[in-house]
Length: 573
Image (cartoon, rainbow, N blue to C red):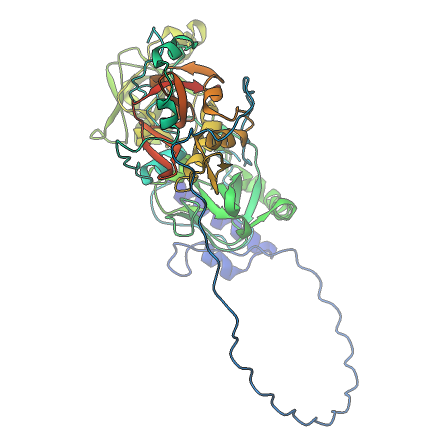
């Protein structure tokens, strides 16, 4: 029997018990069992404790009816309003051309690092809470998936080791097609640099450019955060983006249980409920103490029947959560932030490949190969996927193998405990985790996820949200206009990093690295005749986001090798 069907029957059993106690009506129970309507979004109502009915009060003596008053004469209707109902509008001022991009003298010196703000948090994988009132439960569909040695040169290609963008920014930069900038249209400040008589070679020679920095690779693993409880104030669609027009990735009924992961701009909350992750409006949630009171009442009910639940199942198993409407791998919001309320690190069983074995993207011999295990290679069993398949992890390779292809004896675990994991070979990767649909079949791993992208993601998301806003020479406003250095200075300040005001001073803050080593969120500097005149933020995948000029404003564009001299890393990972 499938787990989903087992849980459905368990819920019906539990609700039957609650009906006998008088907390739920029999008609509501029928709806929860899928006997009412089409069975796809059945709900139940969980009543509050009953209160005794008050004694009826004696009826008062009837009073005599008053005499009817004459109706007033109708007043004449007012004429049409002659007021001006138009709206004021205007545009921001354009920056002065043919000037250096940096609009003012600023403080110099090194910037101090800081940590970005972290979001609210939320629960664990096996604690799939549900609702206090009307809650949805789908009885159809498959079970949702759980979840250069000489320094930098003036020429710079797109970084090889860090071409992947952060998860949340990837979709944004895909949607924002890079602006096609004409060859003759230079960044603001270029003409100022033309007047200098130095050379970029001499400028680079005076820098301390570190060429042996480790390549930064996005960690696909999630990290666990604390629970911040909420309930839906009404039936809700959970959306893929922070827009009412976005794709629906899940639904949840009134009083359904969610966990807040992060508060976003514009009153949006990034939430998690069961296997569904996405965005809802703050106003559509019951939060704080009100949510705690609802949960306290639910837990008291659960306590009454906890002894009757099958062994190994949480007493919260009878609660309902959101139902997904698309698979997790078709939901961009799933990896908007790699934080979760679920358990992410497990003590998995060690195993070895009996012979050369393909790790597959799905439970099918025809599926794509995500990695290859040689005989004796170490692999960890994350989850039994059923029908003879195991979901496994070997290094950063994740996917499915046949149980019969692995040695899972206790001798393997004993060998790992004695010799250590480093003494074993791991699977050879064939598909990067970001391209592997099986990566998030489960959020659990044998390794702790890193928080590399936490600040990088947020600062880049914010930068991309400014695309289309004006360029203003000397400006520092992300909405009303900024020049290139004012743009990055303000962005970094939002996350606790202090940068000087002008690009030349900014170019020495942090660790200077070759442009080819830049990771998303790093800064790239441009110089001509030995003069730094422009700065851009690297967005990954060979693209930048920058306040370019008064003609183009804030744009994304392909990283140009023209005049790029070095990058700086301010966000340490």
